[in-house]
Image 1 (tube, rainbow, N blue to C red):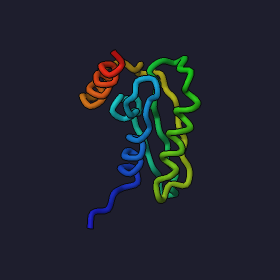
Image 2: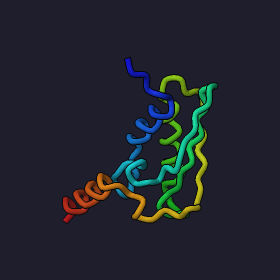
Image 3: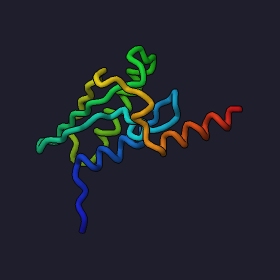
Image 4: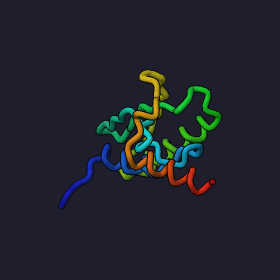
Length: 108
């Protein structure tokens, strides 16, 4: 039986966190720069936002902590917002680009 690592499970959980402005998940957008889980069930997530003055920063960080904390075996989740390297649309994967395109097409 395949055992999913805590880090893999947290990555999967973070795919459920949607950037409310762009409508795509934060992993596909390239906002999550990395994460580490230790043996004690603590997870540290390093991420950024599309802009430093994002008005929804607190909400997004809360959702990230909640998603990570919901993973079995995770007892604490910490989020560090970083601004280097600066986020650009080049960090998005094709899935995020398609979701954003589809969202904008449905609004026109």
